[in-house]
Length: 319
Ligand code: GRF
Image (cartoon, rainbow, N blue to C red; front, side, top):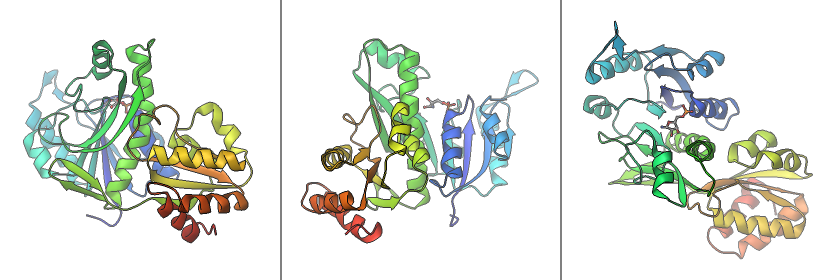
């Protein structure tokens, strides 16, 4: 493993997850080297690699109109990756099932994102449609480590989104995608910081809540999943913008209530917050005075909020 994770992203489609990963790197949220993008065809998503000058390779799964064996194709992809000293591979809409040799070669170093709350609706290319037809009320996205069996590896993070009565497969897919773009960079970040520990089927995320002042509020508000309509409004607010990473939605709700009571605010991701039981990021917006009072209140509050109060005092210099 390198000090800075060497990441490869494998795609087949339009690459919106690839784009989210690239943006996260560009804006300093993700501190990894995106060393190469590999596609199994001339995928439209390659345009993001081209735009940002990231080396890319197309490893076609057909030669002279004839499909090549899966193992042979895997081997060609591994040959490409060999040239880049890869620490982590992120499958982002890569429509190819990796075979045993590939998975073993990069054991616990391949992630995938799937548009359902696994283990429901795994192994399908139409998970969102399947979920709709089944009639579930909550769906979402899952980032997991890849094992030989499709969509069944240890789960790293999930985001839940509501299914609405008037949803089509397309509207549900889009809602899930927005959350995919939040949780995939987060999972990669955790990996790159050495925070993921696999225990049997479970993935434990080590480390604790983080807090830091942000200097690029607009980007961060977008990245954490704030409603587009609210971003400009929130970004124009007076005071400090304190990014709090990896808190539970119920904690973010408490902070929001407290801050609204104090005349400040706390930006939280839109849909899904109430259903979600996975860590999210939030941005506290307030004057020094409001942040001081908040810190005092949090120190006497529930869950991890007293810990956050300590972090705010130490790291963000809120006393
Ligand atoms: C996503 O829904 C992902 O979950 C699935 O394929 C889709 C890829 O989308 N594995 P994109 O190419 O990243 O836009």
